[in-house]
Image (cartoon, rainbow, N blue to C red; front, side):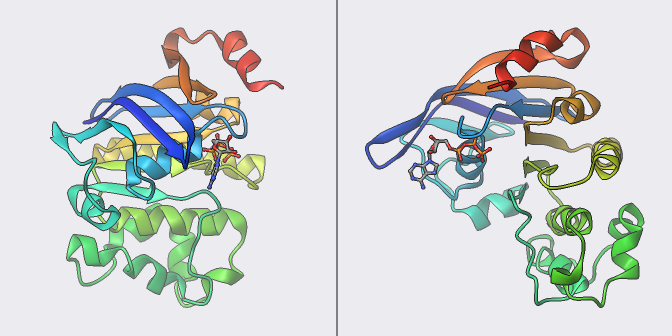
Length: 229
Ligand SMILES: Nc1ncnc2c1ncn2[C@@H]1O[C@H](COP(=O)(O)OP(=O)(O)OP(=O)(O)O)[C@@H](O)[C@H]1O
């Protein structure tokens, strides 16, 4: 579904991704793990077209999308839940979700989005800024799903969220994958969440992928060592 090959990204003269390659299959959930500053956000932003790459390719179902602008990538089926959620705090919950509809062409928020996140239906008239962190994360995911994506990118969705909600989020993401046949790429520092949610775990260290293993065969101790400072 998604193929990243030899991706290089730099801020000015300083290269931070040094030739990353990986693929994500249809229906697969891949967790990209790594400590702060290792390049996860840079990778996510580059896949979404927010940052340019200096070399390499990004293909969606074989089509090179690396030259497209973000909004064009959304129309091709890539959706993004940024770090820190970035909901529009003065807009209502419903209005936030509706911003995703321009890409799908739907005129109203599909019922199945509120079925996934009943709390958003309850709160659809409230300003997003008044929601809790966990509710805002659900809203950011709902907004992304409103674009009807094939690939969902989430940047550190568990950041600042309490453990019970983190477990629920893992279940919800697997349900989204099962029901919609999506591919999901999630960057993460919390190993227990990655183990709950992912089919495959990659580790990024200093802008390179240093570990890539299916969940079922994962050497947890080795991954934990990469994550410890
Ligand atoms: N705007 C920028 N200008 C210059 N360097 C940057 C910029 N943004 C990030 N970097 C550097 O790029 C490297 C990768 O940062 P990135 O934010 O991608 O890491 P990360 O793994 O997502 O970390 P975090 O978990 O803190 O988000 C770091 O060394 C960081 O200092």
